[in-house]
Image 1: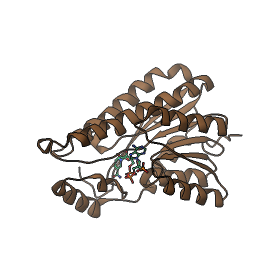
Image 2 (image 1 turned 45 degrees about the vertical axis):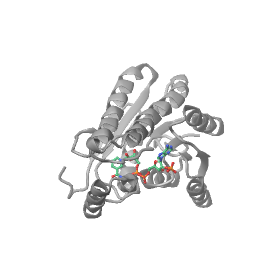
Image 3 (image 1 turned 90 degrees about the horizontal axis):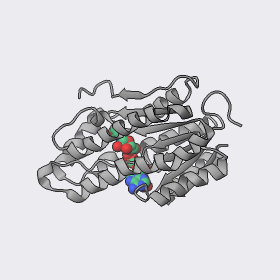
Image 4 (image 1 turned 90 degrees about the vertical axis):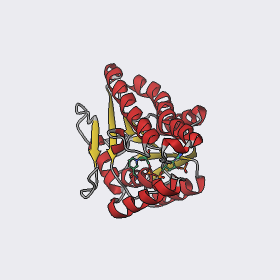
Length: 250
Ligand code: NDP
């Protein structure tokens, strides 16, 4: 039975839970008593994490999920609902950031970012919204970025996808008012994860890795932002959190 702290006993689905922000959030929410349902493609990582969380007294299941496949995202959420009896929180976190100048024509990477960062979030909404509507409660946490507020050379397509996440989340916020559903956008700055490894362009990749080496803060910063949003009283909806490392200027 869910308690009133906003986390204990809640059924939480997390996409991109196999590393970085998703993994840190799974650890934090599991330690606070949530039933965490973990989705990503790397099952070895997911199974190891679910095993660790369960061994520590938590409840976690791992479900192989490619968020570019609508049916797989539906299966992730349906399994969570069947196992936990409801869906309290849907964290649309999976994403990648293969940045490059447009003139390099890395069109396959543009497609990939659109598929994962935008369509993956939409599929997460499509899968969880019917449950939340029926329950007349629920909470979407969609992961944008500082790049969802700003655009810089080399980051155009990534920025576009992260702006899209904010636009989709704001539209969702307005539309789900009749159903008592909360929506939170979290926009981090540089956080130390595997994200820069998705950059294939050597020049941008080297610059970005140096930037992350100089700036990045640990992923528990993100988990704490999630906890803040989830633990508000039911009549308080934290719509957006934008945070950066203290030393990060842009
Ligand atoms: P990581 O690379 O560490 O994690 C990305 C996660 O997304 C992995 O679990 C990966 O799992 C998953 N993923 C990628 N593609 C797919 C897919 N097709 N289907 C399912 N899961 C997928 O990076 P972060 O933790 O940093 O990234 C998480 C989110 O945070 C992203 O949306 C990113 O844009 C955003 N963000 C990160 C910032 C940072 O500085 N780290 C700053 C601002 C935003 P797998 O490969 O196993 O499928």
